[in-house]
Length: 117
Length: 112
Image 1 (tube, rainbow over the protein chains, first blue to last red):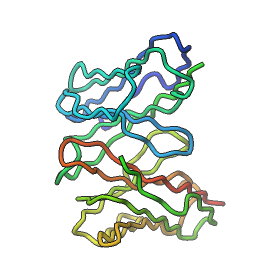
Image 2: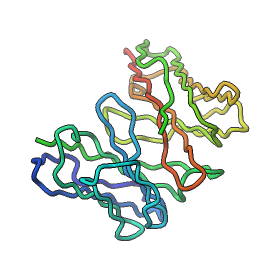
Image 3: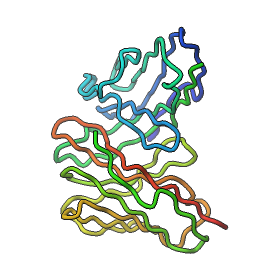
Image 4: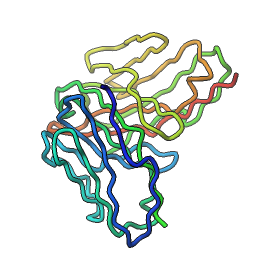
């Protein structure tokens, strides 16, 4: 199994809603990531989990709350989002965390297309 | 995180022609990777080149790296309609656990 699975594929939510995005991998990867991608722009890093611990939070607003319940699962809890948060949210994983001397390929899910109304 | 530049931002060529995309980055790197993205969906890893390598081949892909100029290029030979996609260079920046920093990307269109 070489897949990263994200659910749901599409999500429309109101600004007062609470929703969660889910990401799952069964490749034994110990690093998982959330990226945000706006139309015609590159992905931007939001969070890095390394061995189930949050290691990087790229100054993301608190209305985005990540959670890593175990080494295979990554969630992104959403609350009180704004219309400008509408984007494609991508989850990725890698065997070990990237950075430093490590040569690490990332595997991406197909993304959740989020629309905030 | 600092994004690199990619040029061209959009490229349209005829099927069978070669496509060259360039990428520049701003920090020291240990390796540079190229990813492909179809129609705003997930990214797929294409090729990785280490900082001590100058050129690498994989099938119809050829990537070069010039660390003195902080630049890389991706060449796709004998392009096919199915190569239509966005292509991004990416690298890890930090010394600790880090995520990828992506270049701005090139949108490649292969005309049949």
